[in-house]
Figure (spheres, one colour):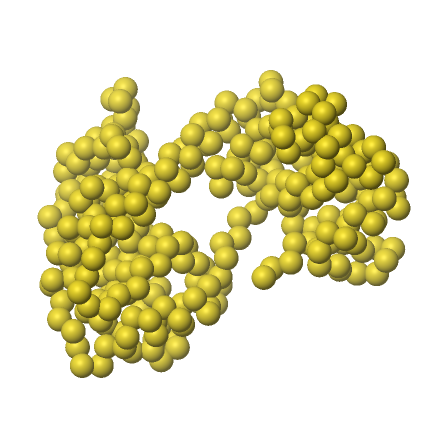
Length: 309
């Protein structure tokens, strides 16, 4: 997501009114990504004497109910849902009001959704999802891991599994120790195979739609893969950057990916020419035909979209 926000910022004029907000969004998503990387690195320290499977970024669906689970640890004792949260500052779980809030470095209070609620939903989803497939499974538990380097728990429930990144492995051990292996527990690799054969990629709307930005406000043209400037022109079947001189025969493919990420999941010849700056309808048609996109409709009204593998 943070890479997409970066693309959007680069395509918008420097003085666009949304630039400041997008900058904050970029840093927020980047910090979350860095936090997840730290969590993944910490879990390398996890070693368990019994069979287990560890999965990251698990997208599943149950009818119209779609979830994205940060991590799943599957063992014969239990399945642990791992929820990664990039929330810094002084953290409060209010036992009286059931509110969750934090104070930032400036002392400003922000009331937020309680991450325990999302974790409970993911646990309930997974129970229903496995039950629907008639797959026996051990109990499902969960842990919320706060990944920022700077966060401090001021108040948190003592009967829930909530920790920081450096505490994650020990917290997982504590959860596992609370369960015993039941006679009908399936092998973790069986559950992993079922999950992996039913993965559903998370679909986020194009970012212009997500942030309510008119796509016509975006800068058009093909971006240089070397210097990143939108200063590339087509010369004798090769794209050449007017800024650094880098030559690339396939620079338009990156422009297509940016269009799908920012504007729409579909594109036609006219829109491709507008966005890329290509003038010839025939050149654009050939590029689209050679780009391994899914073709939709007749030649006159044909559109193209990314092939889902």
